[in-house]
Length: 315
Image (tube, rainbow, N blue to C red; front, side, top):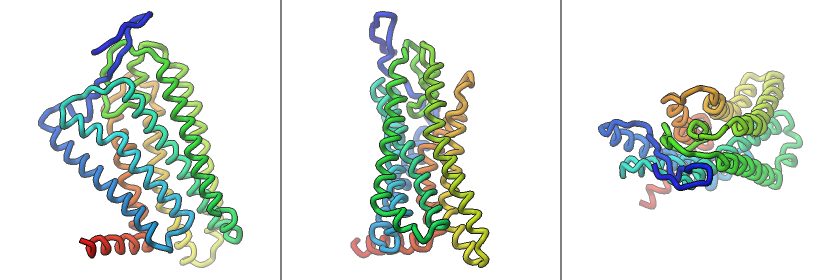
């Protein structure tokens, strides 16, 4: 452990990430699996973006938000997985203190924007189903851009707050993180100073950043469900619910894994279960999103097929 002298002790200058596996024989298998997951995630989300750009039917607010969500998914997995793959190749598991905090900042920035975008998408579905006559004016291009800009601003404030707060803690050893990326729960465990205020900050800001958007999503879909149940036609109900099913699935996965990850700060020891939740947050969610949104949507499927055919013809 490298340390540098401080007035009141020593300060850790780098951390050791144990990664997913410590057995050398399993590292090639993990490398191949996560490289495949990374390529599938980036390729799938880029394909969604291409489909939205080339298909005029997809030039709607819902797909504008979905395109932004695809960019975030690419960023979220890029913040964590390439560095982990590099550690598996080089067998070097150390990460500088500044790089660890940078990874934490960008991860929380992208996840925060993701959280608000899912709320904006729920609001879009509420307007489309419950307020169809005023939908075009209430969800204009200006409103869409403002919602995205506000999402980035709020997420930036949240990520910066946590990064500055964690930088005030003292790390004087040990410096071993039982995870494959730097995050708040793992760093709290290593701090040799009190983390009570940091944990209170995480819960308080988390309530604003996650609790409020989740409440808005639930409220929106309660109104949507009431409006859909008033539709007499079975086919009409099915069509209305089909536009919401994919989004609700993504919301359930996103909030379920996030709540499990950050609501367990009081546990005495973080176990390998937290690594599994981390895989869900950083790999599974970004990889599943394009699959979920394309499987039940004929417009997206048609646009994706057009993109694939265009690539083959160019080849």
